[in-house]
Length: 72
Image (tube, rainbow, N blue to C red; front, side, top):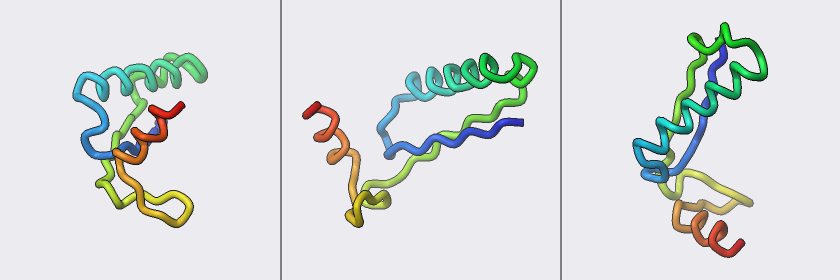
């Protein structure tokens, strides 16, 4: 039984985005392995509070990530 954990910042995804992500990840697992695994594939989305995630020794938050992604 595959178990996939996705970590995102708290309030980064809407309920609709979470539902879409779970479906697409499940589809990818079934496509790469076997469609028989679709019904037993677990996807867990864990929300992380701002400041509880670090990069390069520094705590970051959703605002920091948004700055990085909008600069690209």
